[in-house]
Length: 131
Image (cartoon, rainbow, N blue to C red; front, side, top):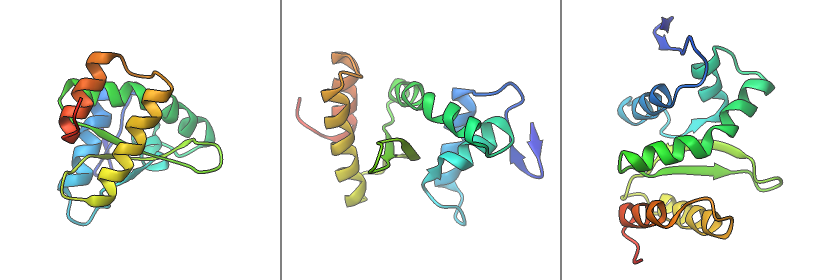
């Protein structure tokens, strides 16, 4: 549903809408390319509250896997103090800082065994990394 020109989920979290929202961040010239957790919470739940931000963070891994299924890499920015998710962005090869963030993310996911071997291979292929 659109409210004041902004797409908002009427059923709560939706990976399909989250991906669409992230694509809009890239395509919109006036928009920031990074999507904060607060921005995603407003899109998924209509409001930016602590509870809604927590729900968005909880679904971060699901969103990452859905993006891999589409052969896209979701770069996730983590906070330094507790490692909680701060923002999301679809990976773009041209940006050096993104390549570094993606490498750190892959290392972190590997240490935590968050991806199976097939998912890890897809992620490395997207990033242009050797197996």
